Image (cartoon, rainbow, N blue to C red):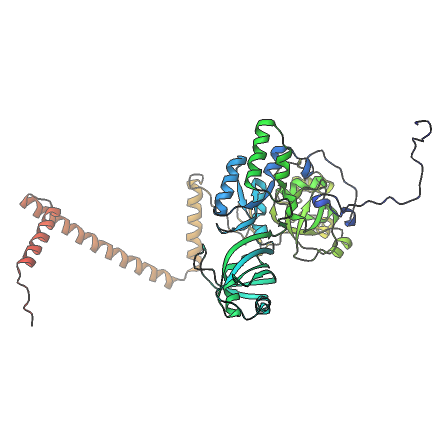
Length: 511
C-alpha cells in the first residue's frame, strides 16, 4: 500500500484559497482585511482567547445567562460572583425581578465592556398581554402594533427603580405571534431600543385598540449581540461547571459555560497592531499609523472600533480618527484615540523608546537641543523642526519668560508652589525688597501720600478699639472682685431675674 502511493506533494499552479469565514471571534474574515505591512517581530507573549489558561479565561470572560424569575439582576450577579470566587462581576442591563431571559454577566476584565453592552443597540422581548375587553377584529390588534413603530414617548411604570421622566425610545419592529379570542390573551415579539419599557408599550396598545391592556409575562430573548440561541446557560450549569473543576479538575464544562470577552466585539471594525505596540496602548499611548499591520474596510471617522493583537486578543476600544482610504494613503499620523483599554498592562514587554527616532530624541535631550519633555527649544536644529509634529497642541500660549536667576518659566502655565520649609529666608527678603522697589518706581508721590493717610486712620481705629476693650475688662474685673463672683455668673443671674419679671407680669386683657 505504501509503495503504491506517492508520499510527495506535487507542484501545482492552482492558487491556495484561504477561507476565514469560520475562524473564531475576531479572526473571522481575516483574509478580507487590508494589509498595510507584514513586517513585524512576533513575540511569545499572550495567547489566543480560546487557548488562555483557565484562570485567565475566567477573568476575561462573560456568561450568557438565562435569568430565572423572582430574583433581581443584582442578586443573580452577586451569586455568580460567589460561585466563581472572582473579584468583580457586572451585567449589561437590568431585568425586573419577574422578567426572565438573556442577561449578560461580565467577569473581572470583561466588566470594562458592561457599559458598552448597555448601549449596544437592539433588544428583543416576547411579551404576553391581556386585553380588558374583546376587540372588534384580529386586524385591529395588528394595526395597533404597527402604529407603535418608530420613536415613542414613554414614562416608566408606577413601580420602577428610576425617576418617572418622559423619555423617547425607538420601537424597530413588532410581530403578533398568537392571540386567544376566548381568554383575550396575546403574545407578541418586539425589537426595540435598549431601555424601553414593554409594560408601557402594552398600555399604549390598549389605548390604540380602545379596550385597555396590561402585560402579564415578559422574557428577553436578545440583549445586544447575544441571544437565546448563542449558548445560553442557567445558574445550575454554572454551579455544575465550577463543581467539576474544583473536584475533578475538568475545565471543559467551565469553558463551555464562560465565553471570552472578544465574542462581544465581533460586530466592530478591527485594526490589528504589531506586538511591539501592544503594551504602549495599554499604558494609554496614541494609536499611530506605523504600528498598524491590518485594518478593516469601511472604517469611518468617529466610528467605534476595536484594537486587536496578532493573536486575536482585544486590546482596547477606540474612536477612529482616520478613514480606510486615509490609512492607505498616509505614512504617519494618529489613527484612533482610546476610549477604553481592555487588556491588562505588562502582558507584553515594553518596547517603546527603542527605535531610531526615539534614540535620536534621547541624545538630543542630553545634548540640550530639546527640553526635558522632548519639545523644541532655541538650540533645536532646523532639520528636526521641519519634520517635527506636535500631537499635543496646547490651548494656552506658552511663551518662555526668563527670570533674573536664569531659569526659563512658561508664562501660560502656573508655577509649582514650593514648600515654605524649603525656601530660604534670604530669598524671601530679596523678593520683598524687589516688590517694594517696583512699587516705589510705579507709584506716584500723590498715591504714596494717600496710602500713608489710610494707614494712619487704620492705626487710630485699632488703638481706640483696644482701649475700649481694656476698659471694659478692667470694670468687669473690679465688679467681679467686689461681689466675689465671676462676670459669667453675674450675667446668668441677670438673665434669670429678667425671666422672673416676665413671669410676674399680668397677661394683657382680651378685648
